[in-house]
Structure formats: C-alpha cells, structure tokens
Image 1 (cartoon, each protein chain N blue to C red):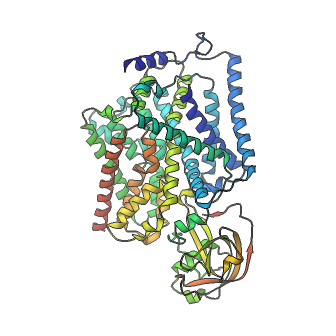
Image 2 (cartoon, helix red, strand yellow; image 1 turned 120 degrees about the vertical axis):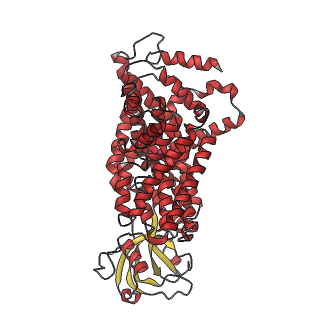
Image 3 (cartoon, rainbow over the protein chains, first blue to last red; image 1 turned 45 degrees about the vertical axis):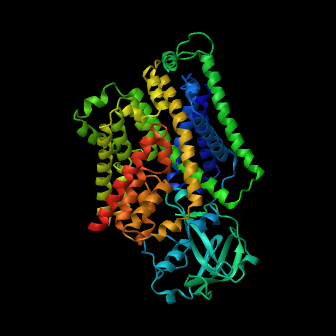
Length: 243
Length: 355
C-alpha cells in the first residue's frame, strides 16, 4: 500500500500549497499572474480527485516486491528519491513563501538581457511613470545619454551590489518574470552612493528618488547613475516582480 | 521472476474489490464506508491546510542561495503542476474512456505515415511538455508502440496550437524562426521515431516499473470511474516524485551555474547555438512560453541559436529527463538526448549559415 501514498501525498502537498499561496496573495512570487486562474483551478480539481480516490482501493504496483533482484545502487537511488520527495514536500508545506534574493540577481547579472522587447517606450516620452524596468531599458537602449542626464526618477526595488564597484554603486533591482520565477531576469537602475552599505543593507527594499547623472565611479561600467536625494527603506511590495 | 507478475495479475483482477474487510464487496463500497473515506480524505486536506497556514509563523530564515534554490524549485513545481495534472487526466481519458481500437481506426496503417499523424496529436490535445509525459504513458498502455510514443512525446510540445501562437506573437517579424521551429520539431521527432522503429525489441526501452504498470492496467476490472481513479493515483505516484526531483535539480543548477557565462557567448554563430541549448536544458521553461523567455534576451543571440533553443528545449531539459525517466530507461534517454541535441544544433547552425 505504501506506494500509493507517495503520489497522493505529493499531489496533495503541491495542490494545497498552490491554493494556499493564492489565497494569501503569494502565488505571484512563483508564477506569472496570467496563469493564476488555470493553476488554481487545476490545484482545486487535483485535491477533489485525490479525495475521491480515497473511495477506491488501488491495486499497488509495489516495486519492492522484486526486492531480491535489486542491486545496492538501486536502493541508493530509491533512498535519494525519498529524500528529494520529503525535501520537496517539506519546502512546499513548511517554508514561508519568499521572493528571489540578490544572490540570484548577482548570479544572473543585472541587466544582462535586454528585457523589454518593445523598445517603443523610449525616454523621449513622459518619464514620470517610469519604473525600474523602464529606466533600465532606457539607460541601456538610449543613444542619447546626455538627454537622460538631469531627468528625475522615483524608484522602488531591492538592493543588490554593482559587481564592478560594490562600495559605491548599488542597483535598485526588480525581477522581470515572463512565466515563472525560474525565468526571472534581474533588471536594475544603478544608484551612486559612496559607502551605501552604511545606510542600506543588501536585499533591503528601498525607495530612491533623485536625478540621473554621469557615473562618477571609475570602476563601475554603468555610464549613467541615479544620484539619490533620498533613500528610504520600504516594505516589500505585494507584487515584487515586474511583468 | 514469474511469481510477482502472477501476483500482479491476481491483484489486478481484484482491483475493484474491497480486500480490506476480507469481504468481496463490489467496487462501489457501501454508503457509510464511502462517507467515512471521503471524510478521511477531507480531514487530511484540512490538516494539510492547517499545517501550511500555521507553520510559517515560526519565521524560518534561510541563507540567500538556499532560499533562492527553494523558491526556484517551488516555482517550477507550481508552474508545471497544472499541466502535469491535465496530462494525467487526458491519459486517463485515453486509457479508460476511449473505445478500444479508436486510434487504429483513425490512424493510417503505414508506420511512417502513422508516426507522422501521431506527431500532430498535440494539435488536438494541447498539453505542454510536462503534461505530455503522462499522456504518452497513457498512449503506450493504450497500445501505441514505444517509437510512436517517443515521436508523440518529442513532437507534441512544439506542434501544438498554444506554442505556435506564442512563437508567432514573439517572433512574428522573423518568420524563419517559427517555420524552422515547426519543421525542425516535426523532422526531429519523426527521425527519432523511425530510428527506434528499427530497434529489435522496443519494449526493452521501457523501465521495468512502467512495464509492470502496463501489465496491471491491462488486467484491471471494475467500473470506469473506479479504474479512472485507480489510474490517476498510479500515475501521480509515478509522475509526481519525478516532477519534484526534476524541479529540485533545475532549481539547483540555476542557483549554481552563473547565467552570464551563457549570455557572454552571445552572438558567435557556433557558440551561441550551444550556449542557448545549454540554457534551454537548464532553465526547463515550459514550451508554451519559452518564445517569450528567449525574446527577452533581445538581439543578443543569433537567429540559429534561438531556433536551436526553441527546438531542443521543449524536447529535452532537466525537468523533462526526470519525468521521462519514469517511463524510459536511462540508456534510451541518453541516446535520445544526444540525437535530439545533434539535430537541433545542426538545425541552428544551418539557419545561421543560410540567414
């Protein structure tokens, strides 16, 4: 009988976790909002079918019945499978939901992809509503950096360090998500603040307001930076990713 | 070796019976038992929700990398779960509810033409790549040969309406990408199917566990509903551990391998093809949306590299290998991965040369 429980338990864990994430508004930490309806309906149906399956007795296909013929490494593999399943189910059921951190931002290199395909919204337009993603795109794509100098911006994101000059420059960072967190790409606007580590910490969510200027840092490869007038710590927004 | 098989047949024959009470109840248990069992099921679900709701109050805090590993893995699980469940449901429908001989009536007799039609089944049943694994298992149980199911498994994630629409939306201005993706997917899947149709004993490509399950499924009795639920449970037992493992491995690799290494290989006509295939293998993003994903890297990569990404990724990646391992032997998967990899790379390089 024991084999039957593996699938049932894992399905229930995944479905219950999905529904619970959704009910708490945390599903967006894992998948793009356009999949919410599909994902939640599938999870609810999954729960209902599993409960219904309690009514029938399922003939087990217990692989351990051929136990004598099994070699030692097979047992190791089976043990690994059990450990992975326990870990996976445990992570789904027990750990608090969380966003990706600056570790992934560093690992994926902030602004390594040219995130937005629509280069239509260029810096020539009204920049008052620009967020991190729009400014990051504008800084990357604009051929007229002098034209951006002086523009003011008010941006919210988490703090990740500029790998080239981690003392003086940090990124106001967001993750851009196309499907799920697995494909998240970090986008960020560089902020020049010497010794920023004395006032803000890595991964902290901040609101930065200031104006763009040429980058005074000699080590950083960012041509333009936001020179902050004010950096205030804020709570993590309910929708931490950008789409 | 014969005794377990006999035992399975015997157990299979009693599938619909309630052995628990020692009586030979019919498949549908009595009303009171039914209520009790539903009650137990609902109780377990309630308990899980309670656990999920109260434990995080403890406020565990993991180091950044560990936290991101967990977040990425959960993200892959949550994203794939609906497709896997949908795939299992379709597999159950194909196995239990379609009339016997349904596929034999509508598919051509000639093996090559038959595989060509099978590679287009995805147009009618648009499940994305992870859902195709349970569906392919259902098709084998239903009587598809192993090469036919491989053809389906490789072709369906690309030749399906959702993938075509999203690819068209993402790369509408560059029709060569969509055309190369569709033609490439069709040709690669049918080539693999043809190669394995030359195999002397195709059933040896299947894992013993799955071969046993086919055995059980053929000897099942009971009402269709009972058989459907039984198959659902068996399939989740086969697929869900693989999904969890595949997601953990995909999450783990993504936490460890720096992405800028791949991106840095950029627009070199040869290296970019290999780099994007490596990226596709690692990211394990669903075939329905991978076009948007790769589009977001903009003009960094060569056209051929994007074509390789869009053909290789849906067929072979970390998560898919874990899922397919439930059904096919490791040796088979290595062969298929290498063959698909070579053909995708050739396609990408050819596009780079021609465009």
